[in-house]
Image 1 (cartoon, rainbow, N blue to C red):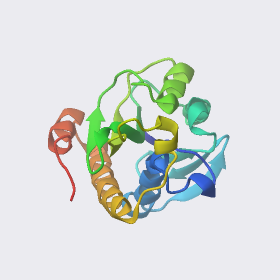
Image 2 (cartoon, one colour):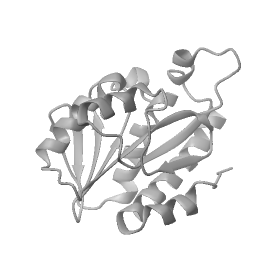
Image 3 (tube, one colour):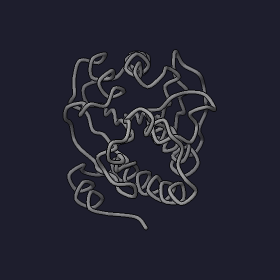
Length: 189
C-alpha cells in the first residue's frame, strides 16, 4: 500500500500559498494519477482511494498538527511495515521549479513534518519536497510561506507539481533510488 499525504493548511485563505504545495500536489494527483477514486472524509483528512491500494490524502488539521491526521489515517488503513507513507510538502531551501526526493531524514525545521515524525514515532519514510524558495534575504519565514505565488511563480509551480506527480507514479512501481536519481536534478522552466 502507498499513502501519499500532501501537507498544507485547510481553507480558502491558504489555498494558493507556498505552504500549500502539498495540497496542490494531491489535487493534481487526484486528476492525473488515480482512476476510480472515491472521496471520503476520514477523521481529520480527505482521503481518495485509487486502484491497487494507492491512497492520497490532505489533512484537515493545520500544518503544525498534520501528524494527528497522518497517525489516524495509518491506523484506519491498517498500515503494515511493508506499506509506504510518502509526505509531500514545501521547502524554502529548494529553489522554485525543483523537487527533491529523500528516503528518510530529519524534519529540517518544517513544523508539519515535525508533527508527523512526533505522532508516528519515526522519520523513516520517503518524502517529496517541492521547492518554493529562495526565502528572500531578511525575509520573515512565516510571511513568506503563507504568501501567495505571483502569476509567474504559479505557472512554474504548476509545472513542478506535474513533475512531482510523475515521480510519485514511478515511486509506486519502482525503486526509490532510481526515482531519486531521475528527478532530484531536474528543474522546470
